[in-house]
Length: 320
Image 1 (tube, rainbow, N blue to C red):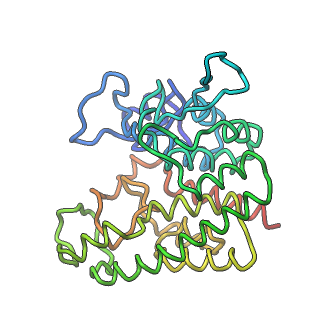
Image 2: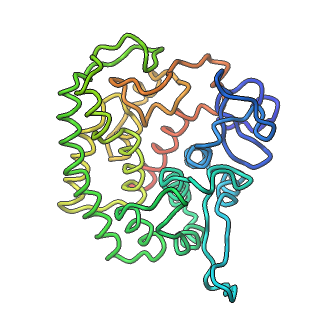
């Protein structure tokens, strides 16, 4: 359930709605410095991505407006022709992180708009996005075809997206499965843990190779959202879903739902909320400090669970 009360969000909850900009942040970690602008609301580098998840989970208009405000219009060319208007995304409000905003942030923002049926808004934004999303990052060909379909709704762009995503997964996923087996990262790691905990696999060149060349789970997470909001069937659709399902863990309830698999209410109830978005991480590889939240921290804005319920309702609505 969404809670937007300032005092409750700032003092009590882990996932925090910030009324000033309508975006989602999280509690300050011990190693983070105090920031006079964000204050108790941190995680600013992933705010657009996190707010996209929150808009999917809650469908709240204030969150939607916060996301739209992260796309700044600007005009290119000396004549200032309005027809040449482009949109520059930012990681958070106040133009934060415009220089290095990543594909991940934009993919989740666009997916959330498509998920909620904001077709006019998404067509407007995607028709004016540049292939270079920031000074640091470019779109991939797969993302470019996906964005072109969202802006035009032409089947040719959708077929191009379907081919490229399936081709990527046909290469990345078998390679990653092999590298993970080679590294010995095949057993779930108990919580809490971080990268320096006692782990069931050994450090060494095999693990380094896996981390260097393996397909990260957050990449699969973003790809699953791209596929969910722009699904394709036929041979490519079947192959792509099977490859994604082969890569994901049985414990990843959200990714299973995004590829069309049924998830029971019992499985949802067993899940214990964490300080991260667990659906884009693996339980057999330690990449961050992860621990379970206390009930008072997730009694509202329980993003990891609330998004499951939202996707469940959305999927049933679109299959009846």
